[in-house]
Length: 322
Image (cartoon, rainbow, N blue to C red; front, top):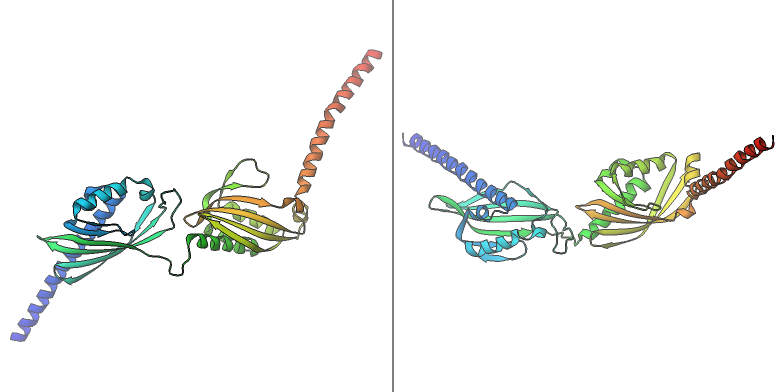
């Protein structure tokens, strides 16, 4: 009889432990959720609510505080800085383990996008890893240690290098091959364009990039090569050669059979182009035909006015002499 009784005891103990574990996990998740809400709302009291009085806290930039009072002072400073609080948070579910019944370790990730440097320049997306050590004090789970670390590109690729690669892929997909459906991978939903011959900047939808490329593909064959690229902050300048072989009369009239140099300056935010400045050697293309025809029409219009006046005067003179 002893073995069944012992087995039943072990089962009951396991069930009780499991229930207690679920309760503790939920309490810890709620604690982390309050921290996230407090951070988004710039509410220092809500952030501090679940910290122990002797909290040891270190952020991703290496700033360390010990104790709630010291942490409060730092958080008040952080929350007052608009460039630090800019951007959006994308919180991931925590992974919680219990090395001891009264001790828990919670690991979680927050991806911050749109944060800025003190000079206003945008940061690339930050992947922040949070490690919190919880201890059960007087029946409540309190955070006694909280360390934030930031993941870095192990290949040494800076955001500038990443932006350069995005620009190269854009030319490859839309202008060197016919993958125009990928336009949204490269351009923001709306972007600013400053083009050759346009006196002011205009706003366009991302699909305009597809429409422009599709028009040229429908009237000719395109290819090209990148000469060089330079990057400065969130800007990437690319000098490339565009080769066009028209397959229609419209393509021949508007462009012709040409290879011309082009310089584009892309302005990036969060991995997408939000502004482009275009510089093309249009004088080498048949686009000059448009200006010739436009000038001819203006000239004919100007010449038409004195002709009309001359006919009117002639009719008046005829009436006077008859």
